[in-house]
Image (cartoon, rainbow, N blue to C red; front, side, top):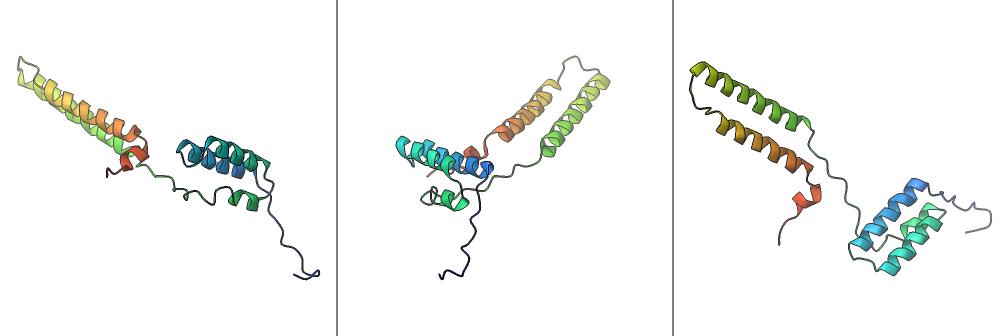
Length: 135
């Protein structure tokens, strides 16, 4: 480079960028990819970094970040619960109209409630647990 060419401008790192990199380094330390000492040193270097090009070298030897997993919308669970409630109401109405002594809708209503509860539980599981494939 000659002295007449301008030096490339460096971009300053934002607090959000530092936090993202620090979280990635801490996650790598928690996963056992870095020792405690390495993690502490890298986190200190992250917060001491002024420019974005200084941050890249701190995670160069770590696996790339995974994009966030998109969850299905809550609409599916609401629709499931609404249909289960409607079927339950229809079963109870049929029981009332039939005049049967034994409350027979208890069994199908129970299983409808269980299906909604399992759906809600599966929705609440962290995505990474569901994505794990056994060897």
